[in-house]
Length: 143
Image 1 (cartoon, one colour):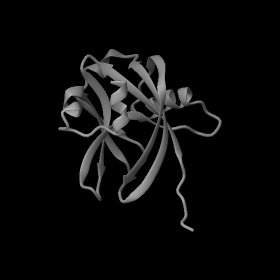
Image 2 (image 1 turned 90 degrees about the vertical axis):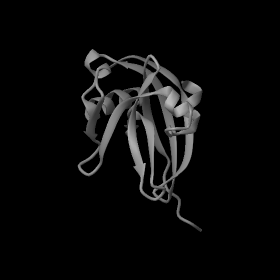
Image 3 (image 1 turned 120 degrees about the horizontal axis):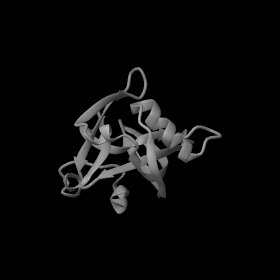
Image 4 (image 1 turned 45 degrees about the horizontal axis):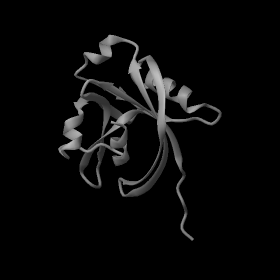
């Protein structure tokens, strides 16, 4: 019997500004492919997804969120770096409390000591045209 991984529960924030969305850039070394995902992170045991969303934005980019609205739940099955992943995503629509985040081109943040990421504003049309890859694909239903 093969050993199973675990299901991760994430809270992600969809932040829009006109036709742009704020996303984190990722890279899959096995597929040699760049992809983009909404910011956020894991929900800790005993923590609500709402609180996790606020904590993750504070920890990763020192940003306060406002106008937080629950959008829905997405189940994501995927292969990353040659390994199967399974996530339950609690998706929220939200805004940055501070206007300075809307003026950024991009920013670099550390998820952990070894994991450096770039977050940036990208026009939704670049995802819809297939030029850039937004994950999970079901995310489009919320744009």
